[in-house]
Length: 41
Image 1 (cartoon, rainbow, N blue to C red):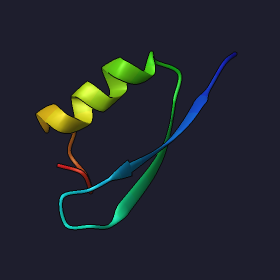
Image 2: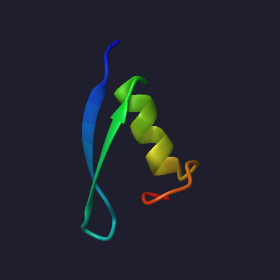
Image 3: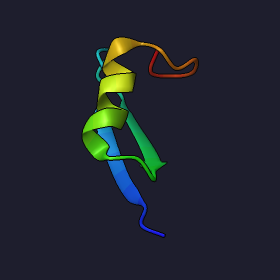
């Protein structure tokens, strides 16, 4: 099982860290599109 650790810079200047089994581009797209409830929405 491959997992990617990622760090996003949020619009308020804070950072968000996450783990994903998805392709990283798809996961970042989900964050940017605001389709996931939570901190980065």
